View: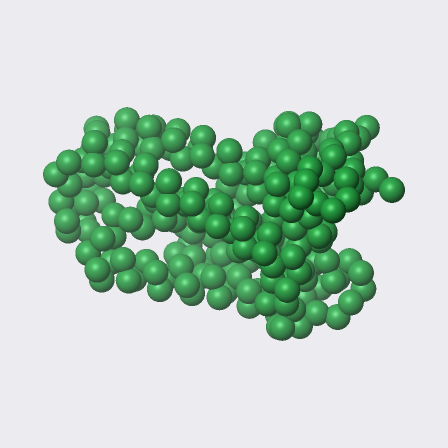
Amino acid sequence: MAQSVTAPSPDPAQVRYEISEVGLDRPWHWLASGWSDLRAAPRVSLGYGLAFAVVGFALTALLYASGVFFLVLPLAAGFMLIAPIMAVGLYEVSRRLGEGEAVGMATPPQAWRRNFGQIALLGLVLMLFLLVWVRIATLIFAIFFPQAPLELGPFIATVFFSWTSIPFLLVGGGAGAALAALVFAIAAISAPMLLDRDVSVITAIACSISAVRRNWKPMIVWAVLIALFTAAGLATFYLGLAITLPLIGHASWHAYRDLVTQKS
């Protein structure tokens, strides 16, 4: 079954999109398709993921050298909030592979030439969510640890291995999960859709929310898989992102293609 979504103004045409209803097993098919794309273009995909792994490691080192290493945790968790827009280059690789076109190292940057303004606008929205999350996380940290030690060793022991860490992690995790769920509903489908179609960010977000609402069970599974793969990549000091980021990026493209079709 499919549900029609009408594109609101300012799109020039009132194009209708159909949101398909999929089974609970579809996230695994998306992962399998993503893995196939990664294997079809390993140099491009792994190079893309490795670039972000290097940036993450460099940012962590900079925060540590600046004495604000307490920001590493919220920024690492906030990575998932902006990941949909960071994977735009991977969507383009999957799109070209699906159409039988050649891909190379220059393919990911070319993704930004397609519907640049709306893609950039979505990126701005996600960046604002990241800034809100960092602010919330900082406030929660200040409430539970007003006099946290500045040395790394005592800091880790106080934040993660004290009795106060339990309510801190529960409150912080709950706040982060709520914000991540909102961003997931907004961006799960909208990011690849903006690359694929000349639509506004409003239309893409509306389709994304509709797809998540209509397929809430498989999309919960998909969100959990994204969180697990991303966490695995971060837990390996970002090195695992070289694989998990392109895998999830390619798979997200196939999720979009599976869920959204244009009604002729």
